[in-house]
Amino acid sequence: MLDIKIKKLSSNELDEFVALIRVFEEVFEMKQFQMPNESYLQSLLSRDDFFVFVTLLDGKVIAGLTAYLLRQYYSERPLVYIFDLAVQSKWQRNGIGKSLIKKINEHCKKEGMEEVFVQADLADEYALDFYRSTGGLPEEVIHFTYPLN
Image (cartoon, rainbow, N blue to C red):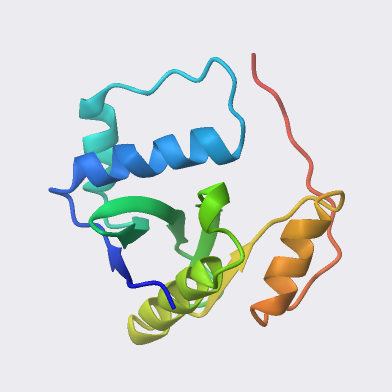
């Protein structure tokens, strides 16, 4: 069992947020990625409707997730959308991703959120299997995008 620590970042932990974005860059193979400026990232980290959870191994960020709180009009209890979740390749299949899902679910339940949800591409069998293994209930939907550039 790895000696890892999972924590929700506060607004003064920009360096760990940047380290997580670098994990995303590596795992998602983001070619020619350019990091947004630190003042923008700081403003995002300071928001009450944006969450960042990181997994630390010996103080180094090796995994994490980002999520957005979505306020509803059908209910006073908000939804939480997991936007990205990644574990550095060499640490995958050690239960770290499952621990992140458990941690955000516990946090959101404690805070009175109604539901946590995440999207996965139909072609990404690894992600589909992973989310099923964490107790996620799949829904068949089609996601439409409207590119604006």
